[in-house]
Length: 89
Image (cartoon, rainbow, N blue to C red; front, side):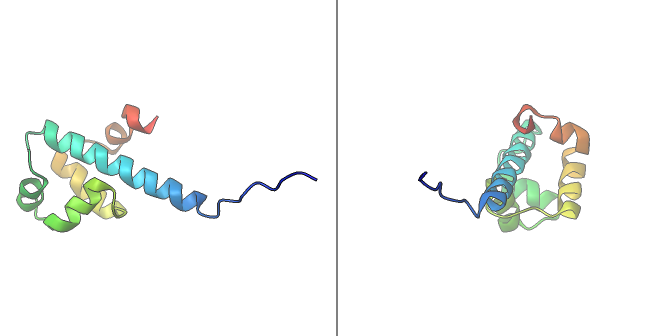
């Protein structure tokens, strides 16, 4: 008899959390490149909730598509350029 491998029922959820972390890290990278040392300053200037924006950057919560579009507009970057980073390859 072979030993049964443990199943990972959370695999899709784990992948989603990893993607949220990667998206957040990319947003942070671009924000800093734009000269904003503080996520609070960036969020405030672009009429976004500072606490929620911080959660997006840390990957603590999933960013919705309409919010991501707003962030990318504020960062002056296209969707394809955002996801064409090495971190997503």
